[in-house]
Image: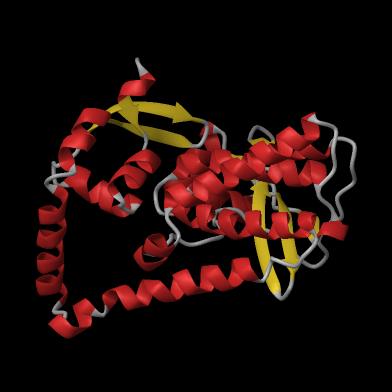
Length: 287
């Protein structure tokens, strides 16, 4: 497959000035079709034909107008309210500008960490909105933080012990069915049997907290993924907090946020952060 002929969702968003949800809508309504699918460890990466995306540019204004009319009719918006809609995402744009301005006079390392945290926060929300492949980029950023940053830069890392995961054997699954319980309920109520498979830290997490200048960001990474970043380092246990299985943190990004802080911008900022650090590290220099 010639990758140069295809565009990722991020690249389509950049070329057409759309949000991922709008790209998904184009696809669901038949205007644009994913021609190939690549995979990373976190999910599918849809690939779109570059010529089809280019050809869509001319039709796009009419499509967007149709969507606006249709949505206004469906949701019962008044014309005045619809026209004021851009004001709602402009407040996110102003928030971003104020945040970045607050970093101007900070030490370089602390400013770089906070800036990366701001964009990682939004990457996390994009991933929650259906772009799960973005977790690979998140993992790279957190791994760099674990390697190069510390408390003096505004980064604290904790280990959150999760409950043991019990993978029921065939006999216990049959018992769960007979008792009209799902597997998770049965495992919690009985603990399984000696034949069931157990994974001690399956639900455990490493927590990354970035603070500074009144800002606070919090991120999590599964223990099986992040443990290798701390082979020669003790990470304190977070007292008084234990994570149960079966739920996750975070929320999907809203359309208003996506208009103000675009996915291409988020990815570009984080890739630049990673490449800048790798370059400095390669040169043997400190920030």
